[in-house]
Length: 311
Image (cartoon, rainbow, N blue to C red; front, side, top):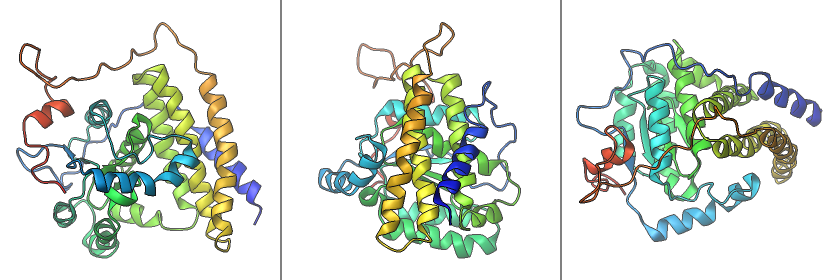
């Protein structure tokens, strides 16, 4: 297998549609059979802070921090502006029933969402869907990290304090929302090299959204983080055919040119008069100050006990 040929073709796939501007919002409404949020349930939920568990997770996430050269990767400390940015992305794309779990471990709730998500055919839900939730249950994200979107439960799980990765996972939710045969589409992801297409779609969507709606700093972060992150999928796809432990060397080697390309793209972004202003942070409501914005992630936190159903 020609590793460099795969790398070049993969980068071409990523660059072919990268950061499409003006951004195209989701035009297709959510399926009537999608797993809907029960009345009164918040779309965004936080995990209860646990210093011992989160420090362990931070340490386990060191390889990811090194690969992406960013200490906020899998740092297990997600701030409110990141949550608000993702909630706004989902709202603007009509994804009001996609669940957001921020550094949270709730296997019971995820099993319920799996069984209720009729948008995925029963054959896929009770096979690959069961395996996906079983993996979530056994390999606890609070420890092992790994931002992800699970199409079988329509849930985004975040462990990194980065707008770019948050919107990227939202891009996966948007991608699946537009598909009729969601179970089949999810299953194809498991085929060799198939993730490169899915990840390119989500990455290009995220970059386009950041270029249209977010600050210049966040646009640069998008290229600096998402390009090398895509490189990990290239390396992982090639690594399937390379003996251990050399597969990890391949992944690391592929990420380097992706870092270079991403930084070149980021350096080309110049502040402009019509650039979207930096999003204002939503502060907690306290006596003598205005309340949090209605519908914001912080407002959702204020309307419930954020730690009531978390571990």
